Length: 107
Length: 120
Image (cartoon, rainbow over all chains, first blue to last red):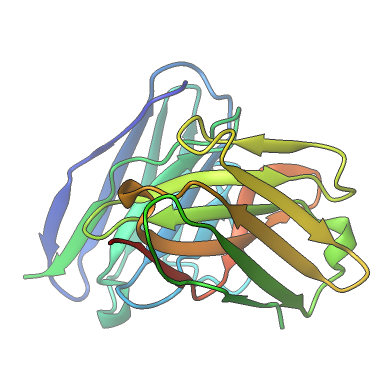
């Protein structure tokens, strides 16, 4: 199975900040990397798929990059609604593993 | 607007069974693979199972293989997860998620989830 490792596991930031979350795969997954946002008590939300394609309706302050084994999610200009847990997920092969999550908290 | 509504969760004893349902609307259900993903209390997201659009192929996490069965009824826009021989470690919120066309493992949107509690 392909293992996904995110860093950091938690992050404290302020409204307006720019933050970056990193995700590493244990082997190459080409560009088959998706990012999901999850707020407690709500449905998880797909933000980015195929490493860099913004899902319809997702604000342009979210961006993704990377290929192979290393990927990043960047949020430029944090908004209050962005404080949540973010998960990377490989879509290259079954089972499609998730990273352990990055909890983004308000400083 | 895509809508996914899970139902069927509840409290069940170890060794028992439950059948989860996911009612889909707002998209051509028969054109999309579908997935089940769960989140145990205080834990991260864990993929459970997937099914192709035409019901040709099904896939399972090792942790549920042989106990869970995914199925779909394209005529009724419904996705199902039959869960047998349930264990305490199956306690979680279960989400159904629509996959992108021809991308089995790129999933979103997700439903709101249904809670399954396995306890005596």
